[in-house]
Amino acid sequence: MDQTRAPYFQALLDYVDAGVIPFHTPGHKQGIGMDRAFREFVGDNIASIDLTPMPGIDDLLQPAEALLEAQQLAAAAYGADRTYFLINGSTSGNQIMMMTAVNPGDLVAVPRNSHKSLLGSLVMSGARPLYMQPEVDEGLHMDHTVSPATVQQTLEAHPEIKAVYVVSPTYYGASADLQSIVRIVHAADKVLMVDEAWGPHFHFHPDLPLSATAAGADLCINSTHKMLSSFSQTAMLHQRGKRVRIDRLEAVLKLFLSTSPNLPMVASLDVARRQMATEGRELLSRTIELANQTRARLNEIDRVYCFGEELRGRPGVFDLDPTKVTITVKDLGYTGYEASEILRRRYNVQVELADLFNVVALFTIGTTQAAADRLVFGIHELAREDRPVDIFSPSGVLERRLKTGTFRLPQTPPMRMLPREAFLADTESVRFKSSKGRICAEVITPYPPGIPVISPGEEITKEVIDYLDLEIRAGVHMQGPFDRELKTIRVVASRQAAGIRDDEKRALKP
Ligand SMILES: Cc1ncc(COP(=O)(O)O)c(C=O)c1O
Image (tube, rainbow, N blue to C red; front, side):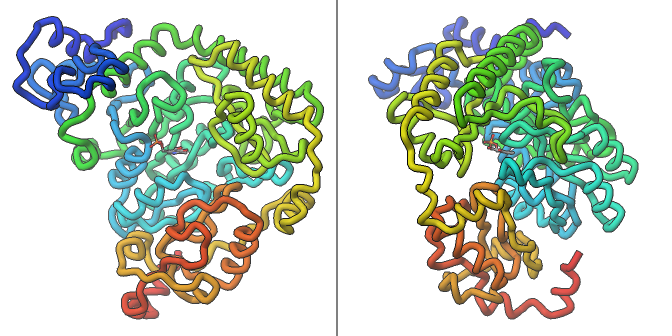
């Protein structure tokens, strides 16, 4: 296939060139009716291609013309059998994969440290999750991917599992041994889904981890917007092989797509693919080199650590994406949150992620040498400041975490209802500290390590309450709960929870 073509982008340009008189949506009519200041800022061109599906422009829900060709080109570029363009990120990709691969009540093996969008996929599909523990790196205070051994043991212990879902790479760039996982999952004749939101660039450079499509995953998602050049919210879903029913996949896909997609977004996927297929290797070589150089410069700064090659081979780190530069600042006496704020306020540098000990800077094909220099300068200055290391003293938990170098998460609580049932049940808010024994209706995830302590459908145990109480007092960031301070917690209303009979509770035990 001719990867220099961008057929969908071209279809939009042809429409503009033809000077068609628009009696169709969107209402701004190629910019004419747009707010003036906004139009002046974004420019006429983008407004002129913000059109609607119509003959000649094709329909994302039923592609038959330029869009079909654009998706076929993307599939060929990624080594997939089929590729679908998404306009609601990998968030919708997770939901689509899960609703395609499993039926309500089916058991699906998933890592406990999955992205929060996994919960949406469990709620929508009605699947019963069986959590696999990721490999935890006590030295770095972070969790990596699940190992092939964990996948193997999980499948052996629960042959009724319908599908396996893994996340690779992690936010920090650790990649799983996907080839081995594919072999294990396929030997058991199950479907493998890979959340490869952070790896849309992998397929285009030999120095990057093996992509999920190359490894042979049945379904995988890429947040093209995260690491490549398409607009925010855009993503791709790739499918390979014969284990997934295409009619089911396409029916599910239609549930998640707007009938009025933003066409510049869709076109940005078409050109991002062209860019990777034609110049990806060269562009990514430069990016990898810049990231590696910057990592080396950062490592020269006293008390700053930026992990790299030495991580490869540790449990859960089969391979590493060098374009994610994790800067450990804890020995400077700063939390990652503080370092992130200082970098922004004083040095005008915004990192992608901050956690308790690290900040993560993403290097992509859009990162310049000047930007990298500024990052190094900011960290350099941060390291020169006299920071009293006792900032952690008010919080016993942070101190304990730093001293022990470990996160002793409480045991995953027993599941009393399916995530879907608990999430959609009538709920009430109760005092968190008196919530023991209630069924949780929300997910609560302290960052780091980003592993949910409790999820919808699970019983709130004393251990969970004690642990979260310590974390809250330590000022650890919580993701998920409606009441961020966790004075209250949303639980399944008593009436509804009382309705689950003991035999049903037993049935939920995997
Ligand atoms: C592992 C993982 N999966 C899925 C998502 C959701 O991706 P998107 O923001 O494209 O919807 C994210 C977002 O950060 C993520 O980290």
